[in-house]
Image (tube, rainbow, N blue to C red; front, side):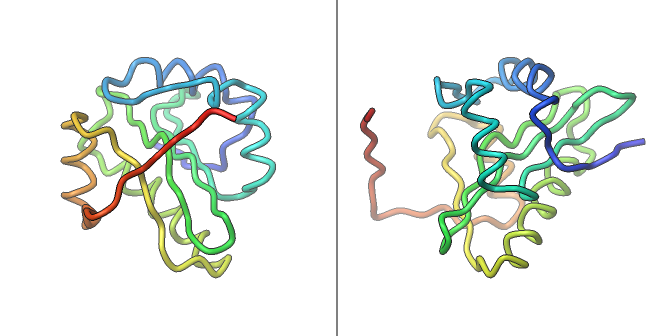
Length: 138
C-alpha cells in the first residue's frame, strides 16, 4: 500500500538516490542536503513523498514565492509508474498551495525529457511559450 506523507530531511538519502536514478531529472548543487533542508523549512507542508514498504518510490518538491508556486523533482521509480503516484503527489502539493492563496503553479521540464513532458501534457498542464528562462550563479 502506498503512503503519501510530508517530505522530511531524514528522507534525503532515499530521495537523492531516486532522483539520481531518473533519466531526464537534472540535479545541481542546489540539491545538496543543506539546500533541500532550507527549502523544506521555507516551504513547510508543500513537498511530499510516496512510500511503499518503507521505501520512497515517489517525490514532489514544491514551494512558492508568495504569488506563484513552483514544482521540482516530481519523480516516480520506474517500477511504480502508471499507478497515479505522480498525479497524487502533485495534487497534494497543489491543494496545499491553494490553501496558502497561491492560484498558479509552474514547473520547469528539460526540453528533451520525453517521459516528463509526456506526463505533464497528459495530466492537463499547459506548455508555455513566448519567453526564455535565464539563469546565473550568484
